[in-house]
Length: 251
Ligand SMILES: [Zn+2]
Image (cartoon, rainbow, N blue to C red; front, side, top):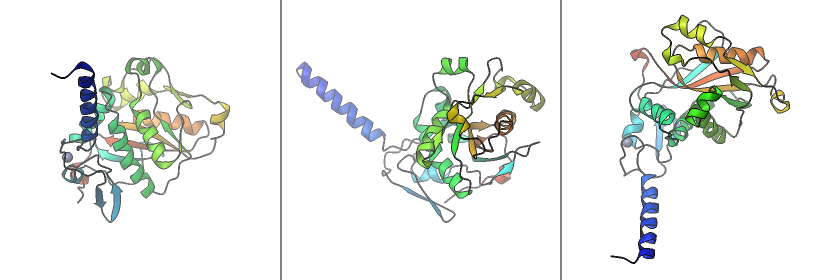
């Protein structure tokens, strides 16, 4: 039995060591053999995985390779990083409900890679907001977590006080079908035009959300920004309900 102080130091050191070792593990399969810098080749381009994923898991990522395209019934352009399935789905739910914020870094890595390949240069990133009560309840906004990580990677501002969501809209997940979702989200957003935010008028923005389902939410948010004089394109991390034929694997 070690004397108490030494015991504390030992447990502190072992906790520290464990944390260090954990950070070298694959986030998806927990394999511990990955190196801090792993390079993934995707169709001739390179993306650094920085030790988040092992090669096997990286090779199975369900990328959405579509570029900018119009949202249904809209001229607003959007693009999407992954299809909503498997480990990507688990990671999005982990970030949303279990505070697994490391996944925000992983999503930002690929979102940055995709946006740089699509020749759009936003002046700022606007995360899709939560209504104030939901933000208080959850303590954080998962889309803002991803936006902050993406902003750090791209070296651009994240503006979280421009687009706001009103209280009173029910979660879109409770709505059945597109018409119900569209009705529920109507007039759900408004702009807060501080002096700093006004400096972005006419500048290209990127609206960021985690999951695309019917598209009604991001469409309403995008329209609110455009009506206010802010040109915007939309990026989502994963899209639900895709055609399996559109799925592409890599390496
Ligand atoms: Zn793995």
